[in-house]
Amino acid sequence: MKYVITAALAMTAAAAQAQSQVHIYGVADAGLVAEYGTPAGSSPAIGSGLASGSRLGFKGTEDLGNGLSAVFVLEGGYNIDTGATGQGGLRFGRQAFVGLRGAFGSITVGRQYSPYYRAIRDVADPFEDGLAGQATNVMAGNHRMDNAVLYTTPERAGWSAEVAYGAGEVPELDVGKHRKRVFSGVLSYAPGPLVVMLGHHRREDALAPDHARNTILAARYTLGAVSAHAAFVRSRDLAGARSRDALLGLTWKHGPHRVLLSAVQRDDRSAARRDARQYGAGYLYGLAPRTDLYAAYGHIDNDNGAVFTVGNATDSGSGNAALNLGIRHCF
View 1 (spheres, rainbow, N blue to C red):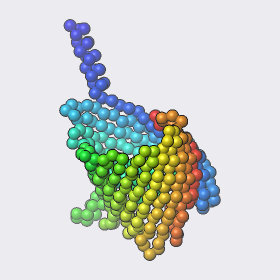
View 2 (view 1 turned 45 degrees about the vertical axis):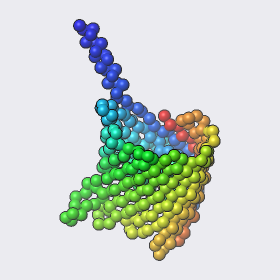
View 3 (view 1 turned 90 degrees about the vertical axis):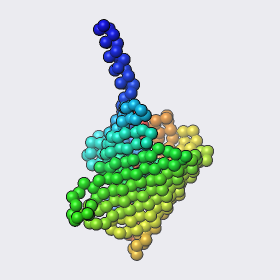
């Protein structure tokens, strides 16, 4: 009898292990950053996470039956040049969420990327929000949302959507007046080589009854080895300043080679006319499926006192031009 019980327990444990999976993953990225046009002149340094933020993460799924799964992600950033924690010292500052996934789509709760940001990173920007040519040097990124509930629909005939709400968790200052809430969403159409995203992001001020908002229309079309990128953004910040931003870009892939090109124009709609233009170029060489070498250059022309700087995936930069040389390994 004891052999039967032992066999049954072993089978139960094996089945549970097969239904629940946890993966450890990450990125180790380091390189040389040479900045130009900084207040102190040129400034070469070793940086971490130039192409992709260096990170260590844990993600998992558990089969709950009937097509339903529990999912989670815990992802923390680190600076590979010093070993220090990224994102201001947050243990899991990049992502931290848990939720359910099934035929209805998915719903997750925690610190997450905003749907609006996905339109920039995944569709509009050839640099995928990394290296010196990244679009968010000039365009609002709206990267992450705290205290967020995110719902993603299933895809139907190429259509899908994401909607997120971030609770402000600030006491009401006046009856019916909320603060610091965030709303973000995208509508996507991806029937094949064409991907189009329409996104909107709204963030309320923590103290005043005001808000910032951004609306983006992004598209990417892939034909063979070439992908063309385009985006148009209308923005308003908390100070009331408005702008119209436009992006055109190109990605070329052939074997281990990848070339990135982009141009971003910011048209300031205020009387100050603080316009800006950014030009970026990048090259990546794949040594292996998970390891590449990269080089990138970005330059911004600022008008009438505009102060946009050339950064990378983890640093906002301090000059109007920068050169990146480095290596990235994903595991």
